[in-house]
Image (cartoon, rainbow, N blue to C red; front, top):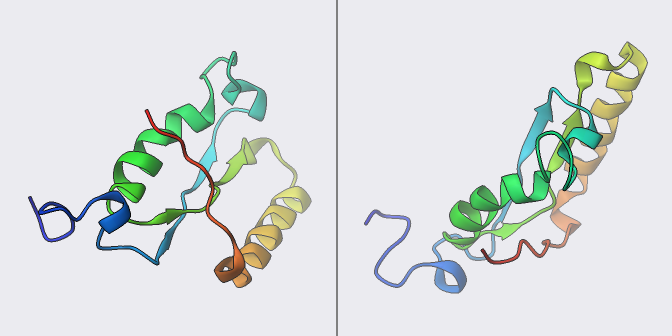
Length: 104
């Protein structure tokens, strides 16, 4: 075991209680590729091992992931709008509530 977990310091008693964690990622495929029956499968199921098995396991509250689908397929204007929206989100992130990640 390490400094972060073990000796009873997991989940509700994890060392990062009171702190928030969020994944931010870009994907090459469109949103349709990451639906339950999509080509790559449900994105929430793909992310669950990280959100539950790493973030929640060590005590973090998990915020909704910031996902950008297929940015290379977007116009410069749309990409700028995506960046502006992310900037606004980060400026107010302390007010965000955690999401329900779900158990395995």
